Image (cartoon, rainbow, N blue to C red):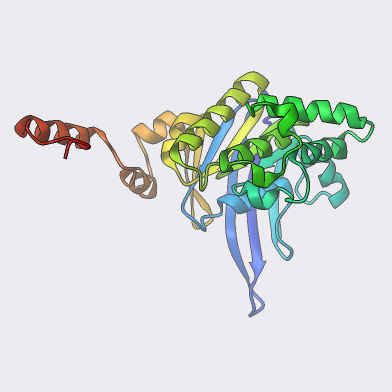
Length: 286
């Protein structure tokens, strides 16, 4: 039996409360991701999605209490010493955050930031080698004229291009697992599609495992093999993506699917209206 790339068992995350008690934000969560697989974690704001990803990365806020197991290729990484976790984070596991502008340092060129991320895990690499890796990473994420643009600063890039830079940083060390936390937030629809297509391309070409954190079921339907639906810190449903959409078992999952806008009925209604009123002037003709 193949060892999962990522296995989470009975993960519970709690924070102390002023009265001396504790509040659980994730409760007894479990899932497994095979090597090269893809998993979507879906839920509304506050459901525990991002806390789960931070726990896997070893980046939980100060004061958080963690119980359960998090295994990476069979190694339990929950509660590892900071030094050991820093060696894993950014090398074997990389993360793309939802706001690239706040993740990138405005005082340094993007190429330099990719170089520094690479050299943090490849200390014997020369500056020339790190620059080559940085340019190649930018080319991999389809940033035009990468060698020149490596010298540009974050404010000189659009939102979509900044997110591509963040993905380039994540890919520079060729990680086994990529966690993308709402990677298309605040991007327009066209750019969202480009970023998602890029993530699919990366999975296909590199075999990197993907955990996609999102609230958007339409994104999940096109991007992942399996889905975990979270509500109030708990997994309410875990299923292959095709089965989740065709036969949801939990009432909350059905409510999420019912909330997704559908165009098929609206298109049919629009055609009926146009057929009944063929002389209605179209947009731009009034």
